[in-house]
Image 1 (tube, rainbow, N blue to C red):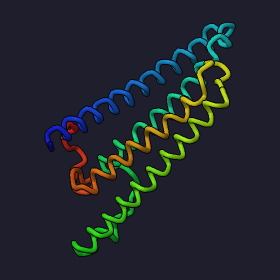
Image 2 (spheres, rainbow, N blue to C red; image 1 turned 135 degrees about the horizontal axis):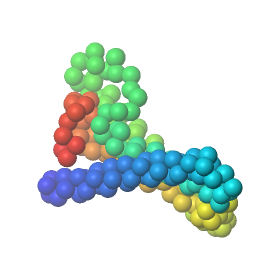
Image 3 (cartoon, helix red, strand yellow; image 1 turned 30 degrees about the vertical axis):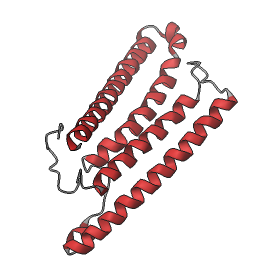
Length: 173
């Protein structure tokens, strides 16, 4: 069972990484192209106004898809001075409280995101230049907070520990 779980988590991690990297590369390419068009052929720049909106949408997706990865790798901002000075038992209790609170808060935000997605779907809003349904913007935080809750759950079950994992650990672990 643990091997199957590890395989599933590895697959999720790989998909997250590929998407975040692809999104960031796509944003760089789009913005570079947009700048070149504005500088070299300014008469065509209005034809590419959609690039600004697309990159903003992509940035939202990149940020929220990276939430779980950042937590898993111990890259979220944390003040650990007091935590590290506590004896083992209180330290475990505090970590349990942190991870439990993280799961509850992340699930609540995912639930709010889902409610917002449903609301925006009913309004029929579309983005001005892309013509994309606006609910796609709100799907990103919903997925991102679900991935974050998953990572807090893994910490709670002692499957991952962001505090003891070395910064340059093998990403496939």
